[in-house]
Image (tube, rainbow, N blue to C red; front, side, top):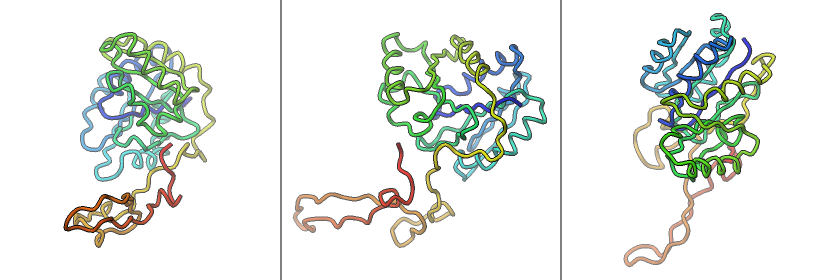
Length: 258
């Protein structure tokens, strides 16, 4: 197998629509892919991919963070795609957390951005955008040329090294350029010994293991607490609020979002 290509992004930005055009285009050009969809609840997109006549598999993470779930299964996915005699493995993530970054150094990391969202939307994305090799601007048929250029300019400011492709997921316009770029990239030697480009957010608090009660008395593990500034005095209440302790992020125990 030549390479692994990751498509990350927020929910409903058009990742599946882009892959529905990109996968058969790659196959037609002699680079048949295998496809994987990581989701939390439903795997209906797997049937969309299977309808293309290409090997497809889905992973349902359930109560586990889908990006943590993906990394935990990445080596097995690599072996599965090799068994399918695929030339590349295309992976679509669930797209829940803007902070997560399941990309490794040896894969091609992509981020899909919705052109109809706010022009400031790219600023709210973490390592999935700042460390991407390529960015797909989707739903370009629904915005003007000027609006599209503003979104692309904001992306270039945040990640000046990424290749940017504007794609219409309904008609497939622009997907040829993306597939050309993917095929031009040098394949990695292997995913064995590969490392993540960025650390994952911590997920080891009491709520991760089923706690439902609210309150500090029921919180254990890595717990983030807000720090409140002093507030004006309110009749009948204390003149100020005690500042909460520093969180693990503020202490440097876990990395902050870029």
